[in-house]
Amino acid sequence: MDAELNHRARALLRAIGAGRAEVTRSSEPDLKVDGLLCCDQVTAHELAHAGLVRPAQPETSEPWVRAELTPAGRAVLA
Image 1 (spheres, rainbow, N blue to C red):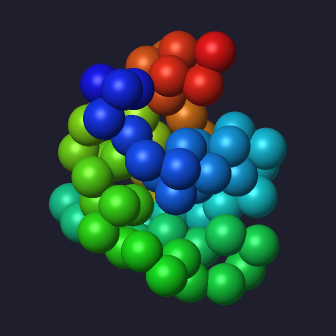
Image 2 (spheres, helix red, strand yellow; image 1 turned 180 degrees about the vertical axis):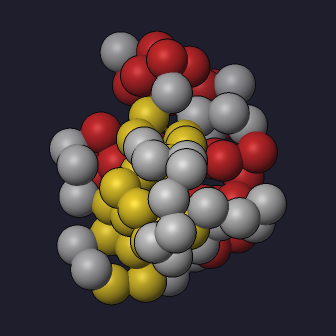
């Protein structure tokens, strides 16, 4: 999977890994980095569907929660 990721996708993963991102808890999650909406929501959706990113708090009523890397997402960056 990591051979298919472009520079933008890797940059998003690094931002998420650094704790700079928030995500919505939906089937097509939106992503914010440093409080700003991500300019490439398609890539954000692809990262979530690939199982590389997830909400850190899946059970909450808040619309936005901290995003975190899954073990697969951390492996891609290793």
